[in-house]
Amino acid sequence: MWSPDRRQFLSLAALAGLSACGFSPVYGPGGAANRLTGRIRPADPVTADEYVLVRELETRLGRAAASAPMSLAYTTSITEERMAITTDNITTRFNVIGSVEFDVVDTATGGTLTSHKVQSFTSYSATGSTVATQAARRDAHERLMVILTDLIVARLMAESDRLPA
Image 1 (cartoon, helix red, strand yellow):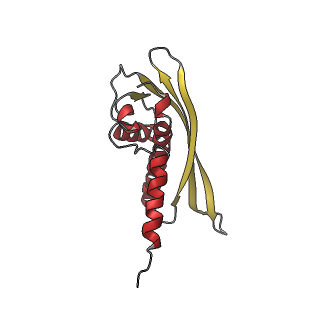
Image 2: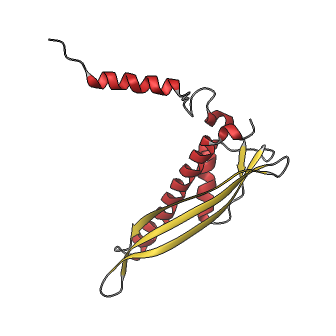
Image 3: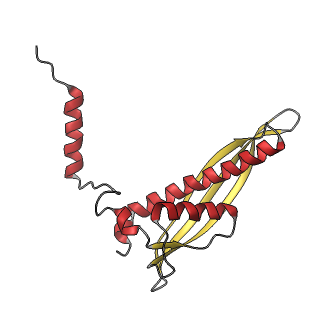
């Protein structure tokens, strides 16, 4: 007895829909990632958090020369909030909340090509020893900067058709 396979039908329908909308993969041949690789130079980092941000941007977009056609100016904001507090007023968990406001600037004209703000958070436990808590704090800050970098790169990829080729 013949039984239609709904999953196969739905996956074929989804593929037909994607081809009709002009979908093209970001990392595919001629994709947005290739157009931005090595073309955006982030501002030099000042803090440890900014160092991680720039390192991750260069990992994803490639290291750009000083003469790159675009530069990325950014402002980071990182705060910590006490989240779990015992009856003895001892904090056992912190949230690390961060945001990055960034502008992509045309280095030839000095004009701003695009501006955005991304934000996210992560957290860490403060229940271990002092050394363990400090290690968890550093790790939480690094994880936050990786998350913020991912958000920045996603925005840049989405707007890559408006940026100079």
